[in-house]
Image: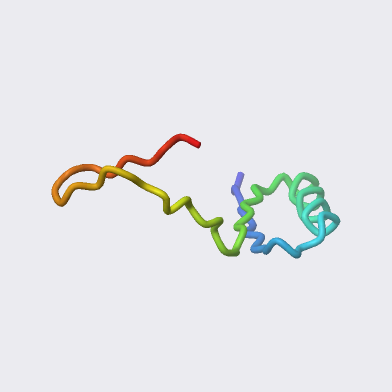
Length: 62
């Protein structure tokens, strides 16, 4: 038996119906479905304190 994989590339504007349709089609064909979400990563907090020249950076939990 051959295993097939489908790569489904989407972004944040891809409708849920399209993702569901791809998942249903893959399930019916017994195919693996891999979804790749393309988009901008959320910005990490820049706030830090206690950064000596050769020491570690401390980032608060909040």
